[in-house]
Length: 282
Image (cartoon, rainbow, N blue to C red; front, top):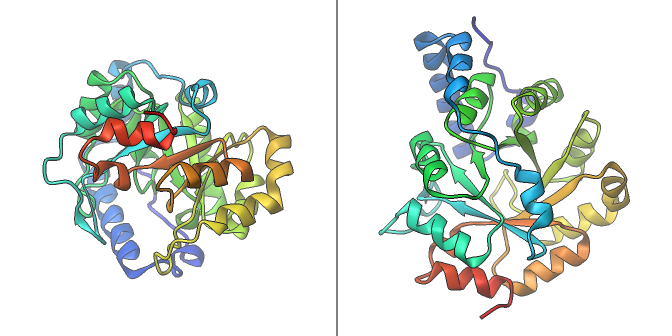
């Protein structure tokens, strides 16, 4: 069974050139995957997948608020290698000791040097729920994430049509996982708020058109839609531009429930202590 690989040009034309490259590469990878195996064979892999952990509840019940999704990221197109002695298991364990609620694992290979194998490894070595952070454009990637042990999957609103977002949400929820839907502006947030069964939204303060970071993006979006989000019971995660306790307080006061931080923590010599400092702990 084949699925068509499509991303809406209406949204993707506004992306930075490097992100359009990432999407082009992703389309090629997905097309190759469909040649290698059917969707049915991918679905059969799920019978051996580890039990889903409750990503949403982990965020809600963490004693540190806003709760932390700590990210495992080896490299990025902008900055290259982030940490020379990159050890995902050691980093994940430091995150957990420091008080993180969940872990985000970048699985994109060509540009970020991530992998589904890292996701599998961390599933065996960490007790925290795992978010698969990938450029999802096709259902097969969702099945791959679940088979590798993901408990949640990232969906980027700017790269998907409304129909794709809704279809992917249904698949993710059917598999018992949660979807973290990422938005960058009010138009994207309003698109996402019209979806059925939306549970988790991420506000990314980094623009996809020029990579500039403005933490006031979170304040603006939550000032406009905070009551609507609360009425729907949607949890809000914030990412980019968060470096310390002051920024966490700022977004929490704006209405954020959780934060996603990776690069600034991974660069630290003592990652566990860096996480504790985020929560203003010794």
